[in-house]
Image 1 (cartoon, rainbow, N blue to C red):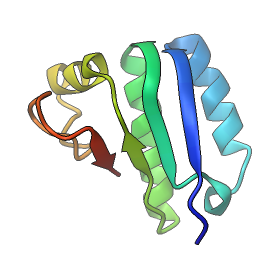
Image 2 (image 1 turned 30 degrees about the vertical axis):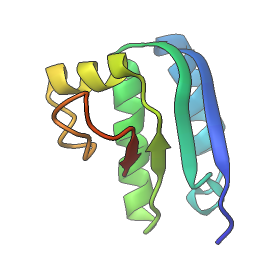
Image 3 (image 1 turned 90 degrees about the vertical axis):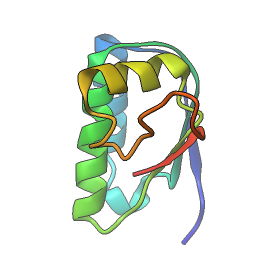
Length: 102
C-alpha cells in the first residue's frame, strides 16, 4: 500500500467541510490518502468533527485506516467538550500525542 498524505489548510468550518467532503467522497475509499494532516487548520467547528467521524466510518467499512496527524489544540478541545473524542479514538487530554489513528 502506498502512503500518501493530504494536508488540510485554512479554516475547516461548514463551507470548507462541504468542499473536503465532496473531494474525498468523489474517490473510492481505497484511493483515499493514508494520512490526513490537520496541522494547518486555522479554525474549526463541529462540522469538522462530523466530517472526521464520517470519514472514520467509511474507512472502517472499507477495512481502511486513516491517520489524522497534528490536530490543532482547538480541534482536540472541541472534540473533548462535545464528547466525540472517544468516538474518534482521540486523547481525553489535549496534552497527549498529536498523531491520532482512526
